[in-house]
Amino acid sequence: MTYSVRETILMSSESSLPPSARNETEVIAIHGADPEILAYAMAKYSRSSLSMRDSLAEISAQRAEQFLNTFYFQYGHRSIADLAHIAFAVERLSLLAAIVLVDETRWDGQERSTRYQNFLESGFYYPDFAGDSASQDLYARTIVSLMSAYKRTSTAVVDLLRRRVARPDDLKQDAYDRTLRARAFDVARYLLPLATNTSLGQIVSARTLESQVSRLLSHPAAEIRLLGEKLREAATGPAWNLNAKAAQSIVDKLADINDEIAPGLAAQAAALFTREVRTAPTLVKYSQPSGYLIQTRADLARAAAEILKNVPPAAAPLVDLVERTESLEVELAATLLYSACHHPYRQLRDFLSGQPAARTVEIIELGLKHRGKHDETLRAFHAGAAIRFDILMDIGGFRDFHRHRRCTQIIQDFTALHGYETPGAGDLPASAESRPDILAEAGVLSDYREAIAAAHRTASVIAAGPVREAAQSATYLYPLATRIRALFKMDFAEAQYIAELRSGPAGHFSYRRVAWEMFLKLQRQYPTLAKNIRVTDFTQPIDIFQR
Image (cartoon, rainbow, N blue to C red; front, top):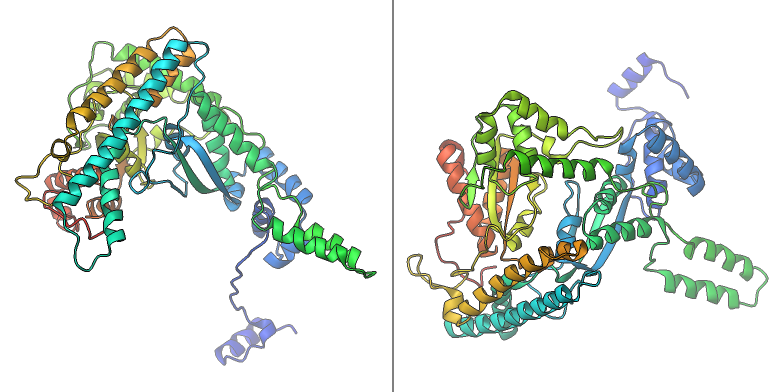
């Protein structure tokens, strides 16, 4: 039945519209559609009046592929790939590869925790040393040395905590033991090398996956390039089906029934329940190494080496809140250089501010010179944030900060140039004025220092070796205690969130200290705003059982 506009208004005002004429919102939770088919169905909202049910009913994998080939690859409508989400389990990859893998602004996942699990049985990544047996032997012996120190440290710290921390009457023994082991792992994890194997799960859109695969394929490390290939193969090849065995059992039982309709039902069941599913057979298949990334990385490295050849890295605090005094152009140029050197951001900003404007323009143009038709600009071009923290912290703590993807993160390469962190009092109950050194009291401080220093020395020897493939392997020997520099750009809400979350008593003492320093810097520059931050004072002792 059709109603005039006037009749519709009158009936609406009287709440008398018949069901067929009402505009009632409907919400449908969807299950069972392949990711690319679902992306196609959702994309059809902008090109068709069909409902989601009708769209999914008429779409086949072939039609979805044709649509995506046209609109995604030919027309560059990349937002379509945001609609297809795929779950991956990535197992037995190195900590180094995991850091590179998750370095996406649009990433959701969880990784095996170095705080709560014993990594003695994880295994390690052993690179191809291309016949350099001396480097290969050094590498293996260093891994063994670090893991021996890891075991001794975790054991010694647990023993110390048992002597220093009594079990509360209301806490069960297994919970008490578990808490002490976790606190010991907090300390021992500093000794884990980047070669240590881990595992993670990720749920990402096909768009994020495509850029992730391309970025991994562009990396200089062979393990990470291979990881990119395996991700692409997993997305375009048959997916693992959790219900495959149960489904096949149903099909087999139907096939065994002595009935004239059973074979037909078995065939239908097989087609429905045991069919091969490929999660992103179209959207990721063309992912290739990014010439833009590879060439720009090399250009910026050469430019930084030339421009800064007489400018050694300046000393810098743990956390530097760099006030905004420079132009947007200088910020862009300084950030591009920052990604290719080991200098603090403040030093680069001040240096470029005193250079001719042409130098700034030259650096910015290097960042855009090789950009292709569909390439997003480098992350360094995400400029203009009001708050910029330049942070120098241990790799272990950085990995926790790395999760804050609402920030723009510019991460410098791994190096031993900045030295390493030594865990201090940690979670030992003591007054703020007399916190003991946990490693010294546990009797493993000299052991810890020698293991870290030896790993850095060995990495330096391997990096200077004659075989290029072997030299690239040196990074895997850096323990998580090694300091890394990263620039975090954000708005005030994110700075408030990080300071509140990461300073909390449940956190690791490494990033609790950084979060506290962030708050102090905010308090100094923005006292009116900082008074609203619900920060936990890092200098005060905490109860290790309040987690």
